[in-house]
Length: 107
Image (cartoon, rainbow, N blue to C red):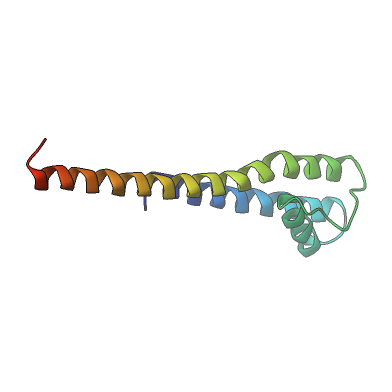
């Protein structure tokens, strides 16, 4: 596991924590229940949306916070993971080239 994969895990943990916090807050403030709030937060975080329209200023603010923070964080998980795969591939190719040079006797 390289540094990019570790960053992906940290971003995933931050995404889940923020999604849970905003979902619980949304469920309580919109009076739809905590579980339904978590469902809405997950739907909003994955850009699918929610089956309930926010009612009141606080649910609107929490919904906007979900869109502006959870969506980019969730996207960064995939970016870090892909970067980690690319870095691993480049490192492997570099190591093979170095081994080839040592076998030829050239530096």
